[in-house]
Length: 143
Image (cartoon, rainbow, N blue to C red; front, side, top):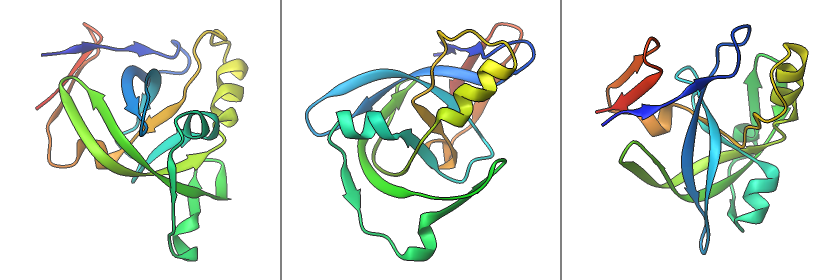
């Protein structure tokens, strides 16, 4: 099975997919960035709060995240489930961050305001799987 994706824009070719994210009592369909280079998954603070996700205690050294924008401090939650293309991963340790920097980058490149992002899917979701991206058809499949 393959799912459709869209690129944020021609000038910002980031892959965006719809994923189902579950908290203890609620599920939401949100837009996520597919980031095969990310060592973890990230969820927006507002979504984590809305879903009532449980904060995890982690060592202080793990609360520092490094990315293209530099180093920031993060908290972690347990996401009950994330689903994409028939694959569901349960109990994912996920960083909670302010994702406004992504929206600022969208704005700077002229990407429409309709494209908001609430999650970044990284390595923990794709670990042990084969990811096939077809840019021509704008589909991806996970095996």
